[in-house]
Image (cartoon, rainbow, N blue to C red; front, side):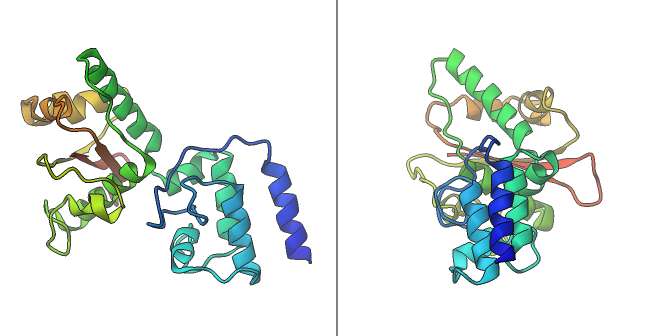
Length: 231
């Protein structure tokens, strides 16, 4: 009874907070989305709490998505983190979706340039950000263009249940950089290996989706590994 009352009180304290953007596109079990509605909300916090007290028997996807703090279980601590995320607690947001605001700024800049050329903006949903993060983390680990299991890099698109366009050749870029949001565009695109190769790709009308990942490089608090995939 006390735990149930605690959940009600905790939820009441955050009802005035604004819900954050979508993070999950499907049952891929991105952190924080337990009900599969493509957003992280107080409903997900409630589900985590109910799992913790045994009122809900979790599915495999809920076990993956609900373990926000990575301790191997879905508990009231995960529920609290979700509530903090909904309230835009900066540290919690960065833990669940590292560098999200910088990545959004990057995509907005690219889409602004596409608009000037009369091109449609890239589709870049929360799942596209997640796919990019997966590739960034894999590259930190293996330093290979292919995935750890030897499959092609673009298999991450299907893995995250995103639409894959087989009529175009997907491309990816990796770059580690020290940057702020104002210089990300220049360092990641216009100055890539001293050429405009990636910029040309990003301005190609044949590409319609963009995956953007940015993961902090272990042991270096100032540098991030970026991964960009166009398809």
